[in-house]
Image: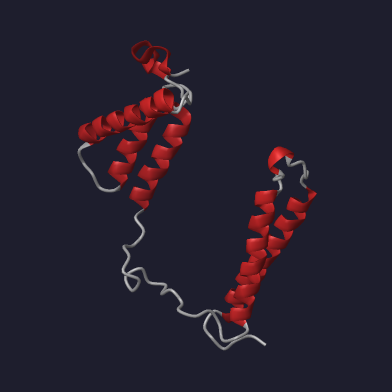
Length: 170
C-alpha cells in the first residue's frame, strides 16, 4: 500500500534502490580478505561500515514511505529553496578546470595545474579578472606544494617548475 503523497512511487523506488545498493555492497565487503595485521582492521572494515549504513538508510527510507511519505520534501523550484538556477557555463568552467588539472598535474606539475584549476573555478564563479585569478592560483598552489613537500615530506610533481624549485618535488 503506497502512501497518497506526491511522488510515493518515486520514494519507494529510491528507498528500495538504496537498500539494494547496501545489500550488494555488503556482499562485496564480506568477500574481501580479513587480514587485519596489528590493528586487526582489514581492508573490508570500511566497506562493511558503509554498506551497513546504506542498509540502515534504505530501511529508514522504507519506513518513512510506509508511514506517510518522506517529510519536509525539498521544493523542486530552486527559487523556492532560496537557491540560484543551474548555470551551464559555470558548470563547464569548473568541470573544465578539474579536467585540466588532471591532465596537467603530471606534465606541467602540481603548482601550474593548481593555478589553472583556480583560474577556471574563479571564472566559473563569475570573475572576469583572469590575470589576477591565475596569480592567486599560482601563489596558493606554490604554498600548498611547499607545505606538502617541505613539511609533510610528500613528493608532488614539480613539472615545468623543477628547475626553479630544485629537488623539492619529483
